[in-house]
Image 1 (cartoon, rainbow, N blue to C red):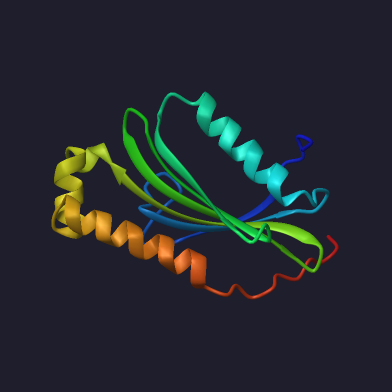
Image 2: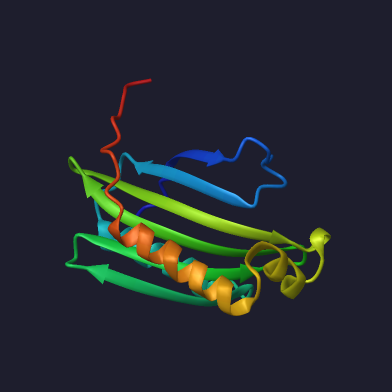
Length: 146
């Protein structure tokens, strides 16, 4: 896969900013790429090179779509991410859902307890997000000339 950068549309809740978001959804189109497996492999390679990644998993659905979920922790943020890669109308897209816990709100355990109740409830919610991403049928994005 070449180093072509995707064209992202990122969405956060109205009360959040790009520096303080806690939930994010993104849609990325790869206008010059069509290799679905290559895009997934490129993300996995980047994750494997990053020592901040706490764990990752790849789910393959009939070689027509892939789901990659992973956790990453930096000094001030813990993130859980889900990327879903699909081809629609011959164009490669990735859809992302991310949850961020920022350490300015406390320790990771304190934040998880505030947002979800406890670690088991967070794990349950994480599994719900993964399930949502594997089942949800996205509207086919329309690519317009700029």
